[in-house]
Amino acid sequence: MSVSAVVVSHGDAADLATSLPVLVEQVDEVVVIANVPESVADVPPGVRVLENPQPLGFAANANRGIAETKGDFVLLANPDAVPERGAVATLCDFAKSHPRCGIAGPRMIGVRGELVPSRRRFPTVRGTLVRRTPLRRLRPPLERQRQHYHLGDEPDEPVPADWLLGGFMLLRRSMLEELGGLDAGFRLYGEDIDLAYRAAKAGWERWYVPAAVVRHEWKRETDTRFLTRRTLWHWRGIARFVRKHPETLARL
Image (cartoon, rainbow, N blue to C red; front, side, top):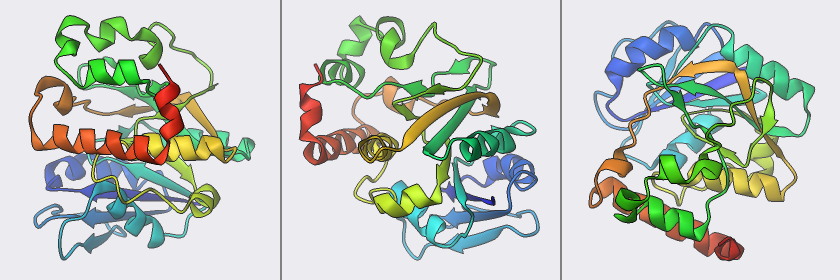
């Protein structure tokens, strides 16, 4: 079964110079979506670059890349995500052995060797209010929301997950076709949660596969400043998720 990689670049040429040579050795095809000018410099042979006439949101760009590829699995990867040797094969082998696995995600390691909590529970109202407001100064999420981030629970074997960070995800194409792809109404943030939630409702499994390791800088940009364009996009994503799935408001 073949794997197609889709990478969305928004001025990330320097990161791509590191990640693409590693990625092309592990997949069957790579498509880079250049969301703005100068998003891509030199690329390895065989990598296709699709330039946008005008910038699109992340989910819309991902859907464009998915439509331009043919693999049985689609690897959605951030420009700064660098898989260790065999990481993609490990994810793919696991997914092939679990026919209802629609989403598989790796263990993520940060630039300083720290574990990035990429396996998470579906959000609750109270937890979201703490994470996305100044309340997080009083109740630091990475100290107080241990269940949400599965802190202290780092398995050695694959385990089910509610959702996984979208920085590096293996997606089964048949699941994407059934669900209609990512929701392009999410500009940035929330599209990975929404995809996992819809997958769960449709009976698709989501798995965390720790034997697959990916190096990824967890920037946490919306955790350090409160009033930026990105935080507004984050709240817009939260609002869209609640409108689509109002039953989640009961998760107190």
